[in-house]
Image (tube, rainbow, N blue to C red):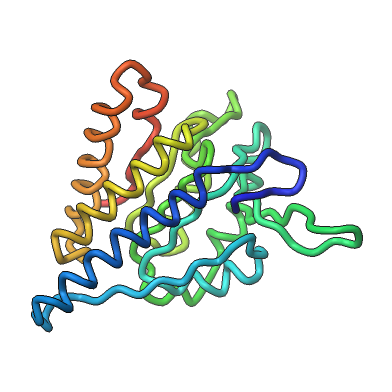
Length: 213
């Protein structure tokens, strides 16, 4: 979602997509050149400015990655949502992918990792509900994704790009993304890299969290 109706553009979305594609292409080229057939070749599908309906049908992938605006609802936690878009009478309008819709999704297939590179996807803003573990990140967990990466507050765009690049480079480079501990270690490596790059800006390197075991 590089553009969102009624909101500012996210310049980092293009860079984030390119960073992920570069990591995967580099890995696939190494595997091809080495002729080691037991290593995995990865394929990707990028969806630019998708609708909620189209997105829900694609949650059968082993890994899903969102780069968009996100909203943590201050009163109804199940209304927290990622901002997608759909056609309107006078142009595109926001199409909300809500936590309630995600958590009740079915037929998720190979669901393994959901990476939510958006604002406040693991934040609870309702003061009276701080003890409730209901937000976008937990919704994907309930829907069947074993591992979910989210953010505790508004994420810096440059940090999002670097985090995604480091996360997938480590995860794919280790060879077995199906090993549970690899996901947490990949995020740890990404956060360490972010800490080095944004040492004087904890708000930039600290919001990324992992839900899973």
